[in-house]
Length: 466
Image 1: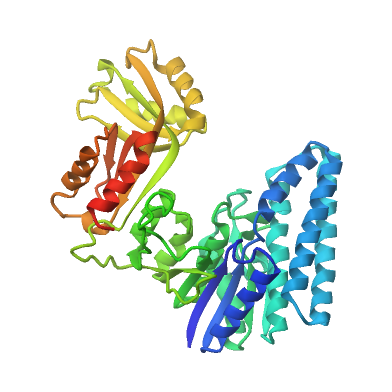
Image 2: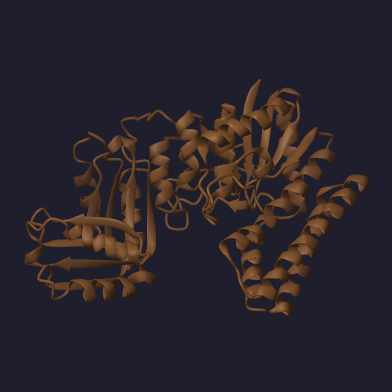
């Protein structure tokens, strides 16, 4: 019997019809002799609306909060009515939804009165999205005659630290707790239906796992249960060789390694957040990305081994936009230990994230890439701290660049990859501003003007016949 954890994203459970379709998918696989755990995200755009509601509540905007609550209630009740045909089950789900929504209203009212939104109370508000969507999916599965049990991530045993908004699982405790609570149900033929994204700290206070949190929930559960596979159901056929909006001939990558998938995910491939791959990678549980609306496709399989074919030197290429480049130069940096440490320490203290770094062997300059919205803050921080110190002569910036990343395990130890790559770029008349490659050789990243970014991606796609 195959043990699979299935996670369904917000677009997969966007409305009642989609939830009914998801329930049918689960039911069909149950008939194929699967043991299953199902993890559910909030309905499409509901988390964004809850963020908005919490901010409006902090501002004391009672009318706006009331309207958002009305819309949220209407959306979930409509989804439940379309997803669940059996009146008794539907009434039960609707009654529980009403109780949950009453609780949400009380929480938001409390924030209005206090005029304060703490990370802890924000996590509490955001937890309602998954609690409601999972309840509706639970009802739809019961409607199809399946033996299911509803869990929050907290009930399922996911224990985190108290870093509200971006909580990290206490992994040893969590793996033990999840195994103890969930595995006995599988042996009895029960399908646990679990809220994604939500967990709790050791005091039982609700926490959330941050961006990609529902994927993270699924891989944590899979690791605890030593599942055969994790299936991430989404609205795309899998990880692609590039962005189909840029390269129409883009194809699905049928198989790649965890390391390759992490590189692609970090550089903007939207199917999965890189941190969510960690538990599966640690326990060597394969992850499959599939399309809820095209279930015949087997999607992309992510595995431990790097299977390299001669023609598959490069697996994919992707682009990050809205970036800026800063260059720091000065003869005083040469041979002076700690210069780079000072630069990045200051940026870190000002909450400025650096995406990519390059330094010449002469040590006379350091270039790095950051998000465009942090550029002014970064430049002023560096100028105030370093100009006049004798270390640097100038700080220059460009606010119209993008990063193109080329990923593939086959690049490692293959001579001439960089020559082919930059030859293809040169033939298109594009100027490369900065290059970085790690010793893993899985990724070559380079910087071009933002207006040249899409041309660069198409050139690479063509050169390596992706």
